[in-house]
Image (cartoon, rainbow, N blue to C red; front, side, top):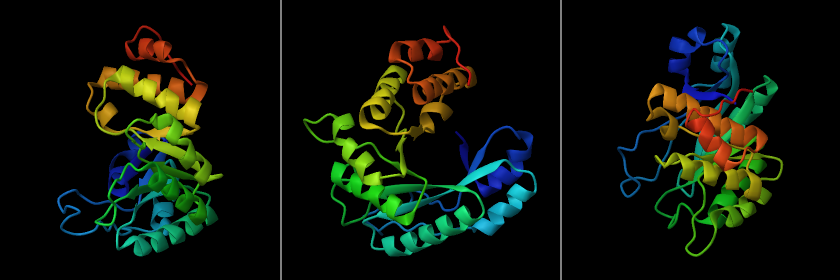
Length: 234
């Protein structure tokens, strides 16, 4: 597991938390420019050599990450950058995670199971170690069942689910358990569901998530960990 951050935050705060493994995100964008105005494009802001400079200065960096917007008219630009990043990262012993989201005027449904499977297949084709995608939705279908197509398409690339918007903790843990035990995901990338909680509650929720992710803890036990009734440490 690791904490995904921008290079600036890692440079400012990483040395204060030497035991926290870091993933450096190499591109990013805001939501101010909407898709109906312009198809999304997020270019690389720094390269792997610059990340290695941070690592060689003592930061606990294990991986790099990059977002590709599948279906954007600029997808070829992002795919080319992603391919170069993966090649250079692996040469230097870093893991790679691609965030791949179907998005743009050509994309009618960003949560379509087949598109998400295609995103996972793209990540495998580009050689990424892991891919982060949104959980699919389809009327009348169980998400964990239709998500198996994405797991198969990913091949030897591990699939990580986006945490999504703030969700009731029990519902979140139930969904996570199905993503891992039924569909075959290898983990999750959770942000708002942790960051928008008070510190103690957020820590307990991290422990609950870890227990489900790493040792397939049942949901009822994971909820007890979240509530502080049980503890979990790796």
